[in-house]
Length: 110
Length: 113
Image (cartoon, rainbow over all chains, first blue to last red; front, side):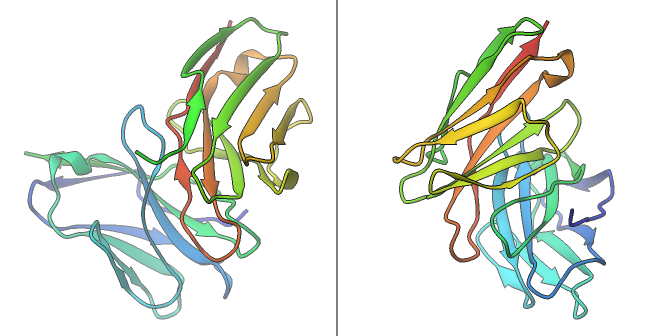
């Protein structure tokens, strides 16, 4: 299984930027980096994904290290609704089979 | 709202019984994956179905089985239920071709007593 390593928990003040790190040292050249988040009592929700270049969308930005062994999810202004467990996942090129770790539980402080 | 619906939302079964969980995938998606999420853990990949065939399986015993129908909806069947099967079961639909995101349903909470 493709492995990722994330901190168990992080805190952020509301309206401050949040940088959520992820290590994936065993990534192969064709693996995509996906981020999902899961709010309490809900299924995971897609946030962003990328391969080599940094990516931006309406929810977040994804910064990928040059060697691709790590990445950082950036929430530009944390809101209370961003409190969730964030999962960094490697999507193998063989299909949309995701191997989740335990994720990072983000607490947003008002 | 992801367009992926699962039923039932909650279920209580007795150890040794069998259970069937259902998932309707999002329009245009041809792949369905199932995940088991124990309390406090990340989802664990059970298996994936593409064009009505199993297209990958995680580390789950054969008593976990599935089906995909021509309309791409899917079922997860679990035989001989054990107490440790109590979990949130998630269904995710996606397109196999291309690197696209998956859309998850809200899950079915199964409790085995």
